[in-house]
Length: 403
Image (tube, rainbow, N blue to C red; front, top):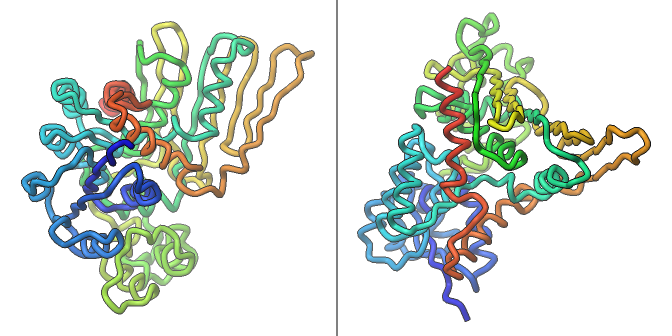
């Protein structure tokens, strides 16, 4: 019987907790031995939720590193600002790393992670879940089918959506000025990776980027808009109302932590009154989020690809068009259609609606953890999204930001 892989969780956000569900459900394969978060309310919650003794719950990574605990790997799901520093520290401690995207905030940081991984022999798997999702895996399968012929071009649109844009990238901490990075890198680096994976090459000849406007500024605020939604006279008409998003619809509240004795509504009202999430999207002074970006890539073999990020949209899905020599493959996350250029050839349609309501990105979140744990247990340190494989998509994003 193989030894359990001992895991520490660093950063107790939504993504980390989803990955930890796999660990909880497969106790025969892995064991959560420690948690780290500077937010003591999250540490207290984790101590209870995961039945951990107090001496295995830490408020800093350095406390964990000097604890003497036997650890094989850590999941790093902190804010992006700390990914590089903590991943390097973890590898220097002798631990493998499951790392949330992006790897770092600069080209040098991302390259450093690849370098330290090679030096230490410790694996860094980047959480590029599209490679593990059944719908996107089917697009890949079809794209390499000899019947399709050579790929000529790919156009891929990521609909970020109004709610995610407002919560994460405007009110939340994932804006450029606070994170020293871009929305495109944070949200779409794995979309760029997906396109490179489809094409089967990372050798890029040129990158061109076109950016939209920064509409979430005070100059674009509707007349009479207050600084907080709870006291705004036009709140009920606003598509970005925090009151509607969090209190009425109860969406995007998983990261909120209740104080002892608080009801759900009391917690949400407090967050609306006191936290960054109750602010008007037009009155977040540190914000500089753009509404759209298009990144065009030309590969050295002539294949052209475009990744488009649309933020101000009701669409929350990805739409992909793969132009091949013999067919056009289109997908919208519900259906994949294959239209052959020979009019006598029967058309094909694949139904992926069954994935729409599945948890954990249709199981992809757990597939990546499963592969990560299996690689450690077997000693064959190979996964689909190792840091060296994931580097190209990051570098393309940085090239795009320089334009």
